[in-house]
Image 1 (tube, rainbow, N blue to C red):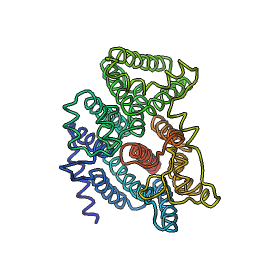
Image 2: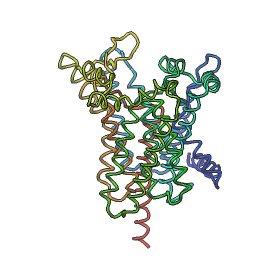
Image 3: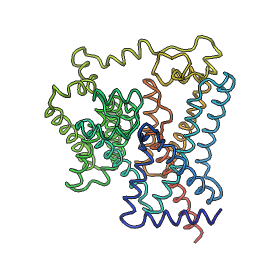
Image 4: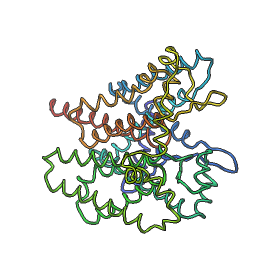
Length: 446
């Protein structure tokens, strides 16, 4: 076993050596985060599951080669296992009704192990700089995918060619047919994709103050941000809210970190102002007759505030007036009914709200247990005092967004984007702490 693990590690290290290695790593990260489900003449190829399975196996082998598993990794895995056991229990007592979240939890394990392996490869290649390189690559993955989304939206020939080979579900087909939203390389796009694109942009912005030190780099950053904002507009309004919250978070964070100096704060303000100016200029320059539906939907919060003086949209009005209801009997409320509202031959739950659907499926108890691995991640990051502040801030922001978005729709574990980002950054956090502890041990015992 150790020989096999050593051979795999040597191959991975040699394949990612040199400057070309960074490109290979970025490509591998892109495939891991945004693997499309392929369609060849009606034959559906589940590329995401293939990628997850292979990388999960490599991650398990890498962990096995280390001997003892880090307690932080182990605690998250135990929390995932508890969620799986509880969902399996509910699934079994209700005569195997809705296995959606049970299957999702299984893939969460695969994503976690795959994330660990990718982080270890980044550590092998970049050394001490691996955290910042990983976050920048996430930003670039989001930018590249945003460029694909915008190109597919603007050019019908490219759109028709692309979606010959990308499998779309019913919702995604409607978006493409009416060219109302752009799902990119995912099967449906929508709010979850917009959240991913916004978080990818945040990974770049949180690093920008420490890395962008020339006009050329600043211009490239602004161009990438413009692409990302365009992709968020084309996927869903939720991402715009996430991005607005993120920019406020970064601004407040810099204001309170007085040690950063006034020049860093000024550079942040100028960067954000330049991004906003580019966005406004892009919107004004568009042919509004052609794209007014997309723009109105994306900016409906603003138009509603301007006309009525309140923040809200038609969809949020429906959500808060009709979609908050709970199981009527106490047993179902506490333990669930194994119906998450979207299973075949099961009653449809007329709610998109994440907490409502999860309570119907797993009850209050099951909801707490199923989401506990995110709480464990948050706890480890909260009590840590040694890891990079940007990394900790980004993990904390992502977990906060998880809590908020579930008041609107279900955000739990997804094979496209969201879950990979959380697990990648947490594994980077753990590996970085292990390196610090190892260096401290060596320094003490020299």
